[in-house]
Image (cartoon, rainbow, N blue to C red; front, top):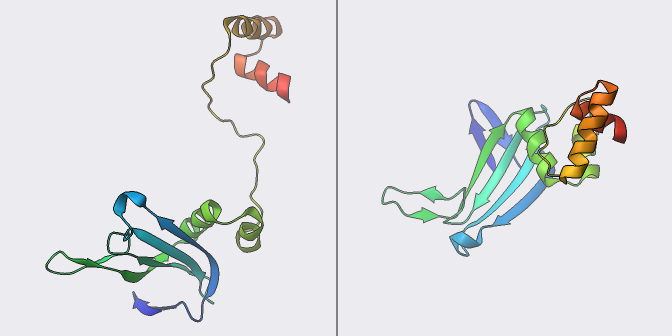
Length: 143
């Protein structure tokens, strides 16, 4: 498929296919399928080629409100392409196109947990004994 959008040419025949996914939404009937393919142009720009059934995400609508199966090209920014690929591609394929996923071991993450009262009491006592926080005590225990 070839389309000009904002004075730029997007052509799925000449762009590099990064990955694809098909989603069938059973709540929308057999016509609710959506297929997306992520492409990268030679210029480095990304776009999605979306195809959808009459009840799908890419369906076209006419003046009477009827829908039909349709295909559409949607330009996406680098971050959107990377997020799409992270959700869809296996890690090896993702790494081929976007590099290895960096894991920041020093970042913090909020957690809500439920532990027996006896364990919670032991953690609080240990935190008080060492002058640390509860989070610091748990992190030190598992570091």
